[in-house]
Image 1 (cartoon, rainbow, N blue to C red):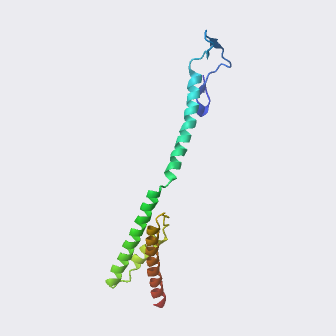
Image 2: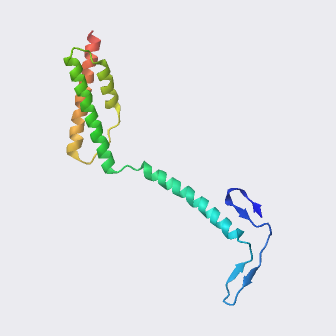
Image 3: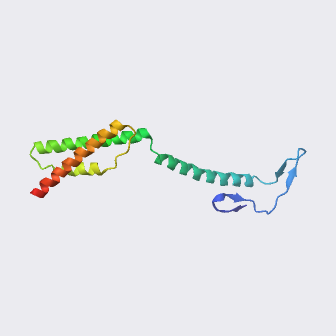
Length: 142
């Protein structure tokens, strides 16, 4: 037997004579290496296809996952606005809260088919952008 890379083994002899049975079916006379090599070659090809299909499925995002991500982002923005409000009420400049707010606002917002949710998320984005602009005006005036 001879090993030929990842495709498996092949018999060392060149040609093989099939034996004929009464029904006309012919089987090559081998020690079982050729069917094993064919199975190995098929298995290696199908495993590559399986991995690529799995990776493609992982990249697909369902509408429910997009909606969940959009809602989570909106909630995080509201939390950042609340942090900024508390910092300003306590007399602090709130630079850390502004930085976190800006970072969260720059994250991509997933699109949702629900017009009501999209409108609400746009209002939250607008409010966060207004707070960042007001902070920029305060910085430039000082």
